[in-house]
Image (cartoon, rainbow, N blue to C red; front, top):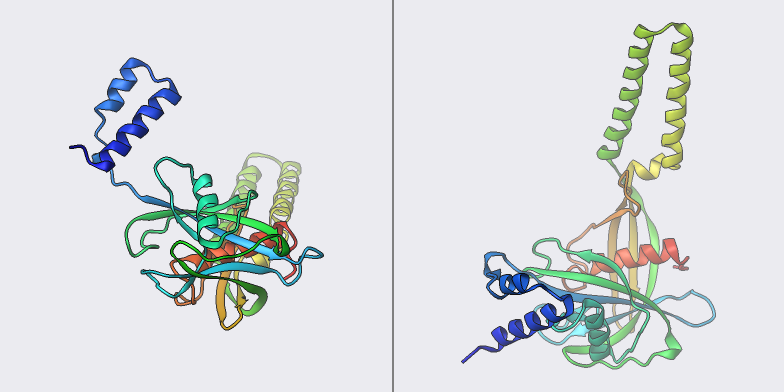
Length: 286
Protein backbone atom coordinates (compact mmCIF):
# COMPACT_ATOMS: atom_id res chain seq x y z
CA UNK A 1 0.00 0.00 0.00
CA UNK A 2 1.36 3.42 -1.00
CA UNK A 3 1.48 6.02 1.76
CA UNK A 4 -0.45 9.26 1.36
CA UNK A 5 2.77 11.30 1.29
CA UNK A 6 4.12 9.18 -1.56
CA UNK A 7 0.84 9.61 -3.45
CA UNK A 8 1.11 13.37 -3.06
CA UNK A 9 4.66 13.34 -4.42
CA UNK A 10 3.63 11.12 -7.35
CA UNK A 11 0.69 13.39 -8.12
CA UNK A 12 2.76 16.56 -7.98
CA UNK A 13 5.44 14.95 -10.16
CA UNK A 14 2.81 13.99 -12.73
CA UNK A 15 1.38 17.54 -12.79
CA UNK A 16 4.85 19.06 -12.97
CA UNK A 17 5.83 16.85 -15.90
CA UNK A 18 2.67 17.82 -17.78
CA UNK A 19 2.89 21.56 -17.07
CA UNK A 20 6.61 21.79 -17.84
CA UNK A 21 6.42 19.61 -20.97
CA UNK A 22 9.50 17.65 -20.00
CA UNK A 23 11.29 15.48 -22.50
CA UNK A 24 11.14 11.71 -22.02
CA UNK A 25 14.72 11.79 -20.80
CA UNK A 26 13.90 14.43 -18.17
CA UNK A 27 10.73 12.61 -17.15
CA UNK A 28 12.74 9.45 -16.57
CA UNK A 29 15.32 11.40 -14.56
CA UNK A 30 12.63 12.99 -12.37
CA UNK A 31 10.91 9.64 -11.91
CA UNK A 32 14.01 8.12 -10.31
CA UNK A 33 15.35 11.27 -8.65
CA UNK A 34 16.22 10.76 -4.99
CA UNK A 35 15.16 13.92 -3.16
CA UNK A 36 16.09 12.45 0.22
CA UNK A 37 19.68 13.58 -0.31
CA UNK A 38 18.79 17.14 0.69
CA UNK A 39 17.07 18.46 3.78
CA UNK A 40 13.80 20.19 2.97
CA UNK A 41 12.25 23.06 4.93
CA UNK A 42 8.59 23.65 5.55
CA UNK A 43 7.21 26.87 4.06
CA UNK A 44 4.67 29.17 5.67
CA UNK A 45 2.92 32.41 4.77
CA UNK A 46 2.41 35.13 7.40
CA UNK A 47 0.26 38.18 6.77
CA UNK A 48 0.53 41.74 8.09
CA UNK A 49 -2.89 43.30 7.56
CA UNK A 50 -3.06 47.04 8.26
CA UNK A 51 -6.39 48.87 8.44
CA UNK A 52 -7.36 52.54 8.33
CA UNK A 53 -10.65 54.38 8.79
CA UNK A 54 -11.24 55.25 5.13
CA UNK A 55 -10.67 58.99 5.46
CA UNK A 56 -6.98 59.24 6.20
CA UNK A 57 -4.20 56.87 7.16
CA UNK A 58 -4.14 57.85 10.80
CA UNK A 59 -4.92 55.59 13.74
CA UNK A 60 -3.43 52.73 11.78
CA UNK A 61 -4.28 49.28 13.13
CA UNK A 62 -2.86 45.81 12.57
CA UNK A 63 -4.67 42.47 12.75
CA UNK A 64 -3.32 39.89 15.22
CA UNK A 65 -4.60 36.47 16.24
CA UNK A 66 -4.27 34.67 19.56
CA UNK A 67 -2.85 31.21 18.98
CA UNK A 68 -5.10 28.36 20.08
CA UNK A 69 -2.47 25.62 20.15
CA UNK A 70 1.25 25.09 20.88
CA UNK A 71 3.83 26.34 20.31
CA UNK A 72 3.21 29.77 21.83
CA UNK A 73 -0.34 28.87 22.79
CA UNK A 74 -2.40 31.93 23.87
CA UNK A 75 0.26 34.34 22.57
CA UNK A 76 -0.50 36.91 19.89
CA UNK A 77 0.82 36.31 16.39
CA UNK A 78 0.32 37.31 12.80
CA UNK A 79 -2.27 35.26 10.90
CA UNK A 80 -0.64 32.59 8.75
CA UNK A 81 0.11 28.93 8.27
CA UNK A 82 1.77 26.21 6.24
CA UNK A 83 1.77 26.02 2.45
CA UNK A 84 0.22 22.85 1.00
CA UNK A 85 2.00 20.90 -1.77
CA UNK A 86 -0.74 21.70 -4.31
CA UNK A 87 -0.81 25.50 -3.86
CA UNK A 88 1.44 28.50 -4.34
CA UNK A 89 2.58 30.61 -1.41
CA UNK A 90 0.31 33.41 -2.66
CA UNK A 91 -2.68 31.05 -2.62
CA UNK A 92 -1.74 29.79 0.85
CA UNK A 93 -1.61 33.36 2.15
CA UNK A 94 -5.14 34.05 0.91
CA UNK A 95 -6.44 30.76 2.31
CA UNK A 96 -4.83 31.07 5.74
CA UNK A 97 -5.98 34.65 6.16
CA UNK A 98 -9.57 33.66 5.38
CA UNK A 99 -9.47 30.55 7.60
CA UNK A 100 -7.99 32.27 10.67
CA UNK A 101 -9.62 35.71 10.51
CA UNK A 102 -12.52 35.53 8.06
CA UNK A 103 -10.89 38.29 5.99
CA UNK A 104 -10.84 37.88 2.20
CA UNK A 105 -8.13 40.16 0.81
CA UNK A 106 -7.10 40.15 -2.83
CA UNK A 107 -4.40 42.80 -2.46
CA UNK A 108 -1.69 40.91 -0.58
CA UNK A 109 1.84 41.90 -1.54
CA UNK A 110 5.00 39.99 -0.63
CA UNK A 111 6.99 41.89 1.96
CA UNK A 112 10.08 39.79 2.65
CA UNK A 113 11.30 36.23 3.21
CA UNK A 114 12.42 35.29 6.73
CA UNK A 115 14.67 32.24 7.04
CA UNK A 116 16.89 32.69 10.11
CA UNK A 117 17.75 29.20 11.47
CA UNK A 118 15.82 28.46 14.65
CA UNK A 119 13.04 30.96 14.00
CA UNK A 120 10.50 28.17 14.57
CA UNK A 121 11.03 25.75 17.52
CA UNK A 122 9.32 22.88 15.69
CA UNK A 123 11.63 22.45 12.74
CA UNK A 124 13.28 24.23 9.80
CA UNK A 125 10.64 26.69 8.58
CA UNK A 126 10.96 29.46 6.01
CA UNK A 127 8.19 32.04 5.84
CA UNK A 128 7.09 34.48 3.16
CA UNK A 129 5.60 37.56 4.79
CA UNK A 130 2.80 39.47 3.09
CA UNK A 131 1.49 42.99 3.52
CA UNK A 132 -1.90 44.56 2.80
CA UNK A 133 -3.70 47.80 3.60
CA UNK A 134 -7.50 47.65 3.87
CA UNK A 135 -10.35 49.92 4.91
CA UNK A 136 -11.49 48.62 8.27
CA UNK A 137 -15.19 49.17 7.61
CA UNK A 138 -14.95 46.86 4.59
CA UNK A 139 -13.74 43.79 6.49
CA UNK A 140 -15.40 41.62 9.11
CA UNK A 141 -12.98 39.79 11.41
CA UNK A 142 -13.93 36.40 12.80
CA UNK A 143 -11.44 33.98 14.37
CA UNK A 144 -11.31 30.44 13.01
CA UNK A 145 -9.16 27.34 12.41
CA UNK A 146 -6.34 27.30 15.00
CA UNK A 147 -6.81 30.99 15.90
CA UNK A 148 -8.41 31.38 19.32
CA UNK A 149 -9.20 35.04 18.73
CA UNK A 150 -8.59 37.80 16.19
CA UNK A 151 -8.19 41.42 17.23
CA UNK A 152 -7.20 44.81 15.86
CA UNK A 153 -4.28 46.58 17.58
CA UNK A 154 -3.58 50.28 17.18
CA UNK A 155 -0.05 50.95 15.90
CA UNK A 156 2.20 53.65 17.33
CA UNK A 157 5.82 54.26 16.31
CA UNK A 158 8.15 56.60 18.18
CA UNK A 159 11.86 57.28 17.83
CA UNK A 160 14.13 56.13 20.64
CA UNK A 161 16.98 58.16 22.11
CA UNK A 162 19.83 55.69 21.74
CA UNK A 163 22.13 55.15 18.76
CA UNK A 164 24.87 52.66 18.05
CA UNK A 165 27.91 53.03 15.80
CA UNK A 166 27.97 51.11 12.55
CA UNK A 167 31.63 50.05 12.15
CA UNK A 168 30.93 48.41 8.79
CA UNK A 169 29.88 51.72 7.30
CA UNK A 170 32.76 53.63 8.90
CA UNK A 171 35.25 51.04 7.66
CA UNK A 172 33.84 51.24 4.14
CA UNK A 173 33.93 55.02 4.18
CA UNK A 174 37.53 55.00 5.37
CA UNK A 175 38.65 52.43 2.78
CA UNK A 176 37.18 54.50 -0.04
CA UNK A 177 39.01 57.59 1.20
CA UNK A 178 42.29 55.69 1.52
CA UNK A 179 41.86 54.26 -1.97
CA UNK A 180 41.34 57.74 -3.42
CA UNK A 181 44.41 59.15 -1.66
CA UNK A 182 46.53 56.26 -2.88
CA UNK A 183 45.47 56.95 -6.46
CA UNK A 184 46.42 60.58 -6.01
CA UNK A 185 49.91 59.66 -4.78
CA UNK A 186 50.45 57.34 -7.73
CA UNK A 187 49.36 60.06 -10.14
CA UNK A 188 51.73 62.52 -8.49
CA UNK A 189 54.71 60.26 -9.10
CA UNK A 190 53.80 59.68 -12.73
CA UNK A 191 52.59 63.05 -13.88
CA UNK A 192 53.33 66.73 -13.37
CA UNK A 193 51.69 69.25 -11.10
CA UNK A 194 48.81 69.96 -13.45
CA UNK A 195 47.91 66.26 -13.44
CA UNK A 196 48.11 66.26 -9.65
CA UNK A 197 45.58 69.07 -9.60
CA UNK A 198 43.23 67.01 -11.79
CA UNK A 199 43.61 64.10 -9.38
CA UNK A 200 42.61 66.25 -6.44
CA UNK A 201 39.60 67.45 -8.37
CA UNK A 202 38.67 63.84 -9.07
CA UNK A 203 38.99 63.08 -5.36
CA UNK A 204 36.58 65.89 -4.55
CA UNK A 205 34.13 64.53 -7.11
CA UNK A 206 34.34 61.06 -5.57
CA UNK A 207 33.75 62.44 -2.09
CA UNK A 208 30.78 64.40 -3.43
CA UNK A 209 29.44 61.19 -4.97
CA UNK A 210 29.69 59.43 -1.60
CA UNK A 211 27.76 62.26 0.05
CA UNK A 212 25.07 62.03 -2.62
CA UNK A 213 24.85 58.27 -2.20
CA UNK A 214 24.58 58.64 1.59
CA UNK A 215 22.88 62.04 2.01
CA UNK A 216 22.74 61.63 5.80
CA UNK A 217 25.99 59.96 6.92
CA UNK A 218 24.81 60.03 10.52
CA UNK A 219 21.93 57.71 9.59
CA UNK A 220 24.15 55.41 7.57
CA UNK A 221 26.83 55.20 10.23
CA UNK A 222 24.57 54.49 13.17
CA UNK A 223 21.76 52.19 14.21
CA UNK A 224 18.69 54.06 15.38
CA UNK A 225 16.28 52.81 18.00
CA UNK A 226 12.53 52.75 17.37
CA UNK A 227 9.72 51.85 19.74
CA UNK A 228 6.71 50.10 18.23
CA UNK A 229 3.63 50.04 20.44
CA UNK A 230 0.59 47.86 19.75
CA UNK A 231 -2.47 48.88 21.74
CA UNK A 232 -5.23 46.28 21.95
CA UNK A 233 -8.50 46.30 23.83
CA UNK A 234 -6.99 44.75 26.95
CA UNK A 235 -3.28 44.45 26.25
CA UNK A 236 -0.34 46.59 25.13
CA UNK A 237 2.68 45.10 23.36
CA UNK A 238 6.00 46.98 23.24
CA UNK A 239 8.51 46.15 20.49
CA UNK A 240 11.79 48.13 20.54
CA UNK A 241 13.99 47.54 17.50
CA UNK A 242 17.12 48.84 15.79
CA UNK A 243 17.23 50.25 12.27
CA UNK A 244 20.61 50.21 10.52
CA UNK A 245 21.33 51.44 7.00
CA UNK A 246 23.75 49.04 5.30
CA UNK A 247 25.78 50.63 2.46
CA UNK A 248 24.75 49.20 -0.88
CA UNK A 249 21.32 48.01 0.25
CA UNK A 250 18.05 49.62 -0.75
CA UNK A 251 16.28 49.08 2.57
CA UNK A 252 17.61 49.30 6.14
CA UNK A 253 18.29 46.21 8.22
CA UNK A 254 16.18 45.78 11.34
CA UNK A 255 16.89 43.81 14.50
CA UNK A 256 14.94 43.39 17.72
CA UNK A 257 16.38 44.93 20.86
CA UNK A 258 14.75 42.27 23.06
CA UNK A 259 13.95 38.64 22.25
CA UNK A 260 10.86 38.59 24.49
CA UNK A 261 8.29 40.95 23.00
CA UNK A 262 4.82 39.47 23.35
CA UNK A 263 4.49 38.03 19.84
CA UNK A 264 5.07 34.42 18.76
CA UNK A 265 8.00 33.26 16.62
CA UNK A 266 9.79 36.19 14.93
CA UNK A 267 6.53 37.98 14.14
CA UNK A 268 7.66 41.12 15.97
CA UNK A 269 10.51 41.49 13.48
CA UNK A 270 8.18 40.82 10.54
CA UNK A 271 5.81 43.48 11.84
CA UNK A 272 8.66 45.96 12.30
CA UNK A 273 9.68 45.53 8.65
CA UNK A 274 6.07 46.01 7.56
CA UNK A 275 5.64 49.17 9.64
CA UNK A 276 8.85 50.72 8.32
CA UNK A 277 7.90 49.89 4.73
CA UNK A 278 4.52 51.53 5.26
CA UNK A 279 6.17 54.58 6.79
CA UNK A 280 8.69 54.80 3.95
CA UNK A 281 6.62 53.85 0.89
CA UNK A 282 3.02 54.67 1.84
CA UNK A 283 3.48 57.63 4.19
CA UNK A 284 1.75 55.94 7.11
CA UNK A 285 0.91 58.40 9.88
CA UNK A 286 2.11 56.60 13.00
